[in-house]
Image (cartoon, rainbow, N blue to C red; front, side, top):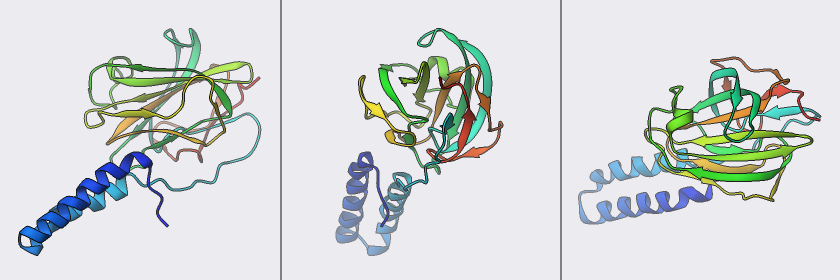
Length: 211
């Protein structure tokens, strides 16, 4: 049975209602438009199970999509240290449910209002609306940012400070195309490459850096 993210049901109900209304008061063939919208909503908010890899010292992708950047940089807002940033762009065709990259305790969740520039641009990480989650794993802190885009105007983070997460556990969703940045310890070995497609909770993106 197809699993749907909880955040998707209001959209699905509205699309289904429109389909029934148009079918009932207009010509039946005219209901094809809201029916296509209904199918898209079901497709977009699908939430398939994933096979979470086992093993020590690994990080999995927090999002489905394509790796658009891998950069070593100083993260001065939350971690205040050197990190490796891996940016993942999610198109409207990707699964948009986000998953924890590793086991850990949520230290901070902070929503920040901002702009809605194209999510694949470098400045989107700095100026777009986003929700940041700092996760403590072993002796390290990592940062995962859900970043809104041109179409994505709603970022949902289901956890709060003090919650614990397991590797691959669902923790949020970004609606209608967006981006997720993850800042890892500077000494990790990155497994993925720019341009590579990844799957949330399943693709190993880095090893090491967990003390």
